[in-house]
Image (cartoon, rainbow, N blue to C red):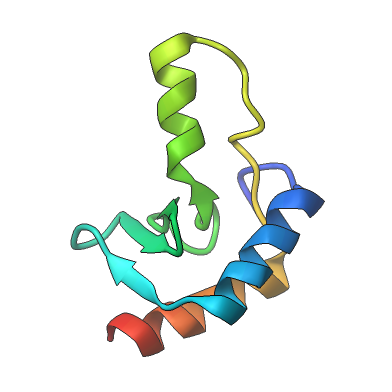
Length: 88
């Protein structure tokens, strides 16, 4: 069961980022960077690979952004494998 609704746009963007960049850890468990995007990876696989930058903007402004969304389950699994390869 996934905690967030699916976003085709974020799914496509994440797949592109995965093909062009390597992950960099920003902290021990929750945040990574892929290209120029900060990504939430905690609570895998139920609520992982959401964009963190958008979440921060929502909290700062109170405006609703397309932020609490996720990529496809297949992309989440692919991203998880790449994260393990890139960061150990």
